[in-house]
Image 1: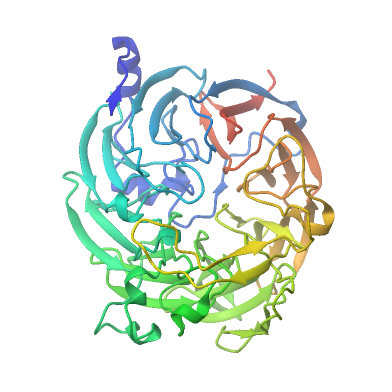
Image 2: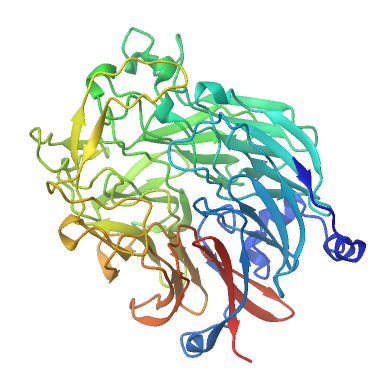
Length: 543
């Protein structure tokens, strides 16, 4: 846990930037030259008003610099950009400050998580948050660390949960006012999920809200009368959103545990697979909406809540857009959680549709029958985007993808896997698509493929799709010039026309893209950055 020494003149360069106040975070989208939080702004639209790179000149994009990370773990980080300096995490929990123009590293903070830390799906980290001169890092051994953005030196270190019991953190924190909000992962190990807020200056806990109600709390009766609730999962591993007018922060909650044996936890299992709206000051639950009650398919609802202010049926509404892992696209009123619309966006067989309240009309499949979508869902944690120019919602999706689910009895043991079964390929002897790709595609069209889909917010209809041979876990970025940037397992970073889906440009990055692109400006020039393979690639227009 140290910062590597750096020359004085580099420290001066990093220190020259202005502090990031809470007011600057409130108006983050207006600072298009920067990227001040995980999803670009509190609305989580991943849309930038930068427009120097256009459909007409995008073919002139060229690689400006590459930063090789010192890790062979999966690289899922979204960098922050503050006045020309990029702050990125390299797995598992290092932080690096980089010159946004040249790729020169200013400093590296190396955090060494406990080697006994338990993570289900790789030692990954998705990014940072910033307030004042402090960066905030959530670690895989469940610590929250504040780091001086000027020097890379740690300021405080708070234990959030017990890693030995299976708790971890892989998300980028969310700063709201003077608080740093994080959630815990570890559903595969039988944790009891929670969200917690910490004072940005001291690291002291301000509030904690459990995602599974305890005895005497509303919703506790949605779990069996035994102690299933105490190790029922409902983890939080993707960054939420915030509406400053309502003072509500929104978070997606993971699946119940054990993952694939719903008979061990009869009931709807609140608040697993739900969207939660919390008072940002107190953590008090204001409303919830559950997408997949008593989920037997591991359909985490840990997608990013995308907030949009728009007219709905002739009236201005505060909307929440949500393409869920269960294969349905939802529109909710984020002021009260009211269900407004829902439509499948990929092939779905586990439910015939949604009723008037948004509850799925389940159609359980016979044992051994493929279930659509498969275990990784119609989409997953990868970031969608919304463009206010096109009015379209863009989602990275897995289409025609299924799994066969096998349930098993699983006794809970602290710190051990608690999954209650396994998913299987629908084709005997053939591999199914997974989150870890490679240079050779081992699966075929028969087991599914990736697509970027553009959805009409009001109807849920697919306006266009960009089909890939392999699947994708790349996020999406849209810009004011009607460009869409994304990647995929195939090892390409590409630009599409956001209105038509036409491929306009692509570049080989030599490895799987499992992060979301960002764009920023330095010295009057626009850049686009993407983490891919084991490196951070930055592109700009040819001069």
